Amino acid sequence: MADTVDNDFLFCPKCGGKKVQYADDRKWNCPDCGFKLYNNVAAAVGLVIIDEKGGVIFEVRAKEPKKGFLALPGGFCDPGETAEEAAVRECKEELGVEPEKVSYLCSFPNVYDYKGIRYKTCDLFFVAKMGISKSGALVDSMHIQDTEVTKLVSKQVYSESDIDKLPLAFESAKKTLRFWLSSAKADKQE
Image 1: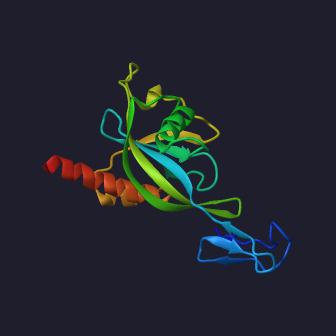
Image 2 (image 1 turned 45 degrees about the vertical axis):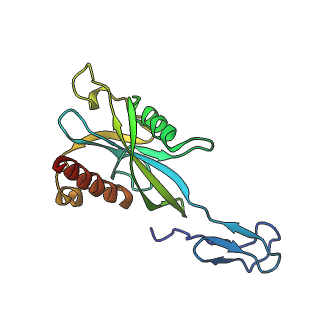
């Protein structure tokens, strides 16, 4: 995204000085008044949900960034919320269903470019165990939040080649699927 501002302030938020510097890829310093503002990483969650045919459920994003690309269901953690609570909440909000259980899988750093601002995130991923759908296909029992999701798709992910073919919105999801795939293969060998 060419117009993304990568953590630049034109003025100090405290004194209005124009010499604000971004140091160490993590904080702003104002040499005029000594103000320091740390650019802490935002926490976000994602879910690996497997349907009844062994496919991974993806959302087609309905908005920027990466509108139209595939994403694992998820979103940002709210203040005062655990990552597990955020994963369950995001599943209920975006898919209209509550997982029976979420189990931690892995985490990866990511960037989220939105409206000219780059947010650095730590994305925590979970495997979601879903209940048995009475209507047949798991995807059919879900009710998407259309402001966030255009539609749901199920994709078979058996190899790194399968992952590379997916038009994924975020690099952290690609890394997570690789981790999940290698973990699943390791579990089968035990």
